[in-house]
Image (cartoon, rainbow, N blue to C red):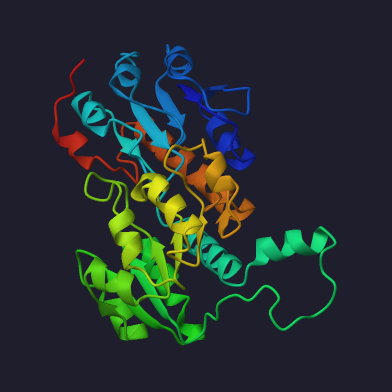
Amino acid sequence: MKIFVTRKLPRPGLDLLRKECTIELNPDDRVLTKDEIIKGIKGKDGLLCLLTDTIDKDVINAEPKLKMIASYAVGYDNIDTATATERGIPVSNTPDVLTETTAELAWALLFSVARRIVEGDGFTRGGRFKGWAPMLMLGQDVSHKTLGVVGTGRIGTAFALKSKGFQMNVLYTDEKRNERIERDLGAKQVPLSTLLKESDFVSLHVPLTDATHHLIDEKELRMMKKTAILINTARGPIIRETALIKALKEHWIFGAGLDVYEKEPEISEELRSLHNVVLQPHTGSGTLETRTKMALMAAENLLIGLKGGTPPNCVNKEVFLKKPTT
């Protein structure tokens, strides 16, 4: 079996694939262009790709032999799953394994913004610290505040549960009732508008869909408290970035912590210049342990799919009910 891997991954995952497959690996540590991916999958049975790769109809139809696509990510909105299904190609992702890790980063961002950690680090390294002062670098308390969680799937639930030690009042917005956080935290399900108006911290954990694109725009930002903090570790386009920049510059809210961006990897100079936002380079799952588990899971999905089985994390299981087309 021949497979194309679009970027270097932790070694255990690649070693697992090499036991049974011939691998062509992108030698450069960069995102490949669409044409490069099309060239890479020529003559290949399988594709292991990243969230940053565009796997559209043109790519999928470029190789008639293609039998399986494994994504090294939870999200798969970069893959045309409808075309893959029509072709009879299973698509898999890597859920669960990065849930706790991403929830931890959301908390890291929350504390970093609330206590002005990055700003304080630069202040201190810059030689401006002259000793303790009553009004120096005043931030926000976290304990006993109101936490708003937008989307309570795996990551949103894990994020909410970690608030227990801080004795927070938890509000959440989701299409479905989350009985677990209601039971364990006394969380209350409310409309988005109520959550935005009442929360001291708002953390986004929804997938990117037509319904969630620009879910947070100027109208929503103006609903928030002036002392509120907005966290996004989900997808960049959930927030209209120009509206957020305006909100931060004019201090409609206290601050924001971002791991994802609307036009990623591009980040506007205006956003980068602001002191009341903490910016991370999309490292929600960025720990050695988690990235290794993701590589192994993606490899296992790919191997099972190539052998004709149902990958454990197949996102288009209806593919097994359809007659493949070429």
